[in-house]
Length: 233
Ligand code: ADP
Image (cartoon, rainbow, N blue to C red):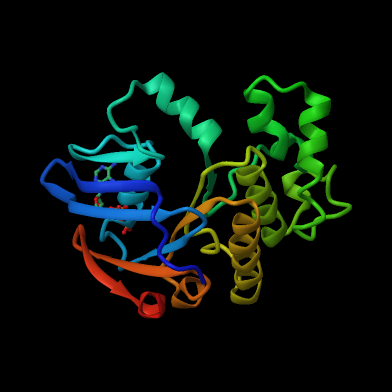
């Protein structure tokens, strides 16, 4: 648990996003401090993923602003936003989204190689994450040869290998049984914190949210104030 820090790594202000008649976000602000883990909760269809996508530069909001380390990122061009996503952000999705034909270590190394790092060096860096994530010996396995929990741990390593400022996770344990999900969530929060990154995680599992420093709740595209761990801050 950390106290509220003065420096916000990521800041969303007045975010609005419509899909036709649907108001997915009706004006949402969310600040994330350095090293802070924030859980976004709320019922299905309330706007959680849209909020995450706006903060992560995947979706451009119709109104509002997003700042990363003081720099406005919602208005920059797609090429720079995609570079930003690759270098400053890490992503963990519900179904790992690993490339099935690549061994685990190369899946993890991929973001570094896409950034121009030579393969041997990138794979070396990738391997450093296997021990801390309990994946020793699984380096050469392909995703099809891993359990669901192991595949998600590989996805966590891939999200952290670039030493991002923020890791975004959208229902990272949604496809796992409860015990495995909790192990994976613990590893996600711990390793993100050790890597010095902030974490924004969308979940509908209150157990998952317990690992985070703060919980915010989205209802009908609006933030409903904070709950849970917020009281301890
Ligand atoms: P949650 O993540 O809380 O389940 P979403 O952010 O995915 O909610 O969706 C919020 C609302 O926006 C829902 O009504 C959903 O149907 C709608 N929505 C989300 N993405 C799209 C899209 N690409 N096109 C049309 N409607 C969308």
